[in-house]
Image 1 (cartoon, rainbow, N blue to C red):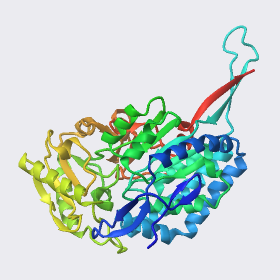
Image 2 (image 1 turned 180 degrees about the horizontal axis):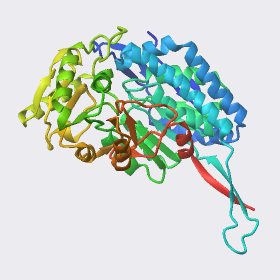
Image 3 (image 1 turned 90 degrees about the vertical axis):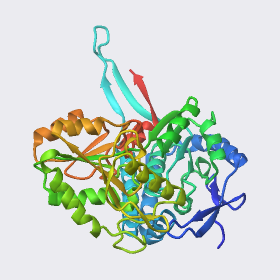
Image 4 (image 1 turned 135 degrees about the horizontal axis):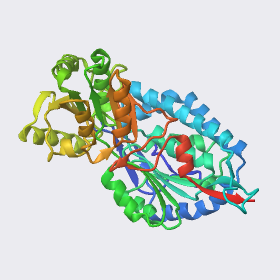
Length: 471
């Protein structure tokens, strides 16, 4: 099979070292892709300066037309994209198809933002002598951007960076995850069909060394990174004067009180914990139940767990597929053993049954000081926790280094309001697992979960600079 190219200034380039991409399900090589080196990265940066002068002047109709074309072509090539996502990411095919649908919507939302971004008019006559003063606020593109995306959503998390960059008229360099560059290259094929200035974009699979070169490059004005906290915060430190948007990890919790409908909550929690082998930033990692229903919830979870489908991601009914690679598989198993050795009770699973395939795992009583309590699992592992009452459950959620999203199962509106006011997270999801993300909503976290917000309208603002004309 001919290796995939990288895209430099909107053109495919078949040169440079080859990066092997492996199928997580069996460890075999799926394909190879040409990797950009530092010299190519420098070319991309320099030409992006020219590209930005063109893209920043594009009229709104043209930017909307580009985004609409991408949306339509993604829809037309849905099964091709879903198959690529399934194979290179190990994502169960049902979720791979859903990811394509979401990306279609993400580009549509970006096109809609273009039409509605009309700026703001302010009345500035706030003091004597300012009579008649008005302010016209408009948002201007930030400049050439560096976009770095993760492996777990190789299309839609790319879309959440590329779509707002195009909507705002920015130039950009996209570095897709090394484990899943194929989906980004397919997207580049579609972008190359549009009228967006070729000098304004590049898609560069590359090594960490080349990626670090781009992070530190002074001629790039914005860094948008989605990935692990350890890598993200180091990038922020290395990024110099760039504006930085970080969408990092989490140890998302669900809170279940005595008014919750457990027949509704249990399947939502299991789906939230184990779908796609828990490799979602907002996968359920902590299940916190008030004392009065704790045992009932535990029993229902244990009754339902054997019915969770896991295995071959190419089967339509599979919920949990393989972990992305051998390194993360062994890390997860080691973390489970550490938790057990320090007092956690293994309630279900905890073992490997195939290549990178871990049985959906539930533990009880995970203490502080172990990896599964203090870090993001990013694996099919969840912990069950008991709280004396609802307020303590909220405190337990906040007793974390992370703050991304939390699900709250309750029928009491006063408790939902209490949770919304007191939870130290970026989003609260009512009667659903925290894995719910609607692409139009603001998405992001606090503490070690990152800074800034995605979601098209919010990402577009992040990628712009506000300018006011006073007259």
